[in-house]
Image (cartoon, one colour):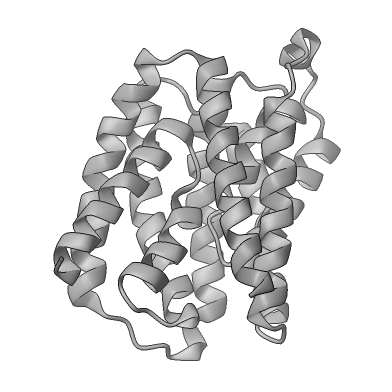
Length: 248
């Protein structure tokens, strides 16, 4: 299979994940770029952030039209994560790839387990406090910069369980956070001068953007709890695969 066809296929899957689940895109993008398309880890991380930024912005628009974005909460969470994302990106450059991979696998698994737990109805009426917003934003930003991912796989659980948003609102709002955090992480990595294969990145991104539109339609048809279970299962599978890779 040609590199362009692989890029189109992987991009479409990642777009579906971002559009329907509000996250998971960069989790899938990095291994796809490395294992399917032959990117180095450094190039894959930078390219995935470019892809996820463009795709998240597109998916954000579709969710905003449907009223699924909580702009004030999302903007505050994203703003709180900008500086931690930049600082964590600088720190991660000094650590071995295996350590980062294992850390990512552990965090993804914890997030998945949390999403599989039955949700507390009282959580849906939590008061949104500045301390909660700042803490969630800083943590998500740090994870984005440290692991080189969009952070949606943690943003959705945080928005649901910490800030009390319902699943569809959490999905839409997480896309705003992903876009801002990814841009901040890209800023921190811009000085690295990593060469990018635009002949692969361009079709990958185009397919992801189209997939995000289909993902949005999928999110409308599937119930919130079902989306949570799908999201958690995807996270567990990714965590297992990355942990195996880290120990070999």
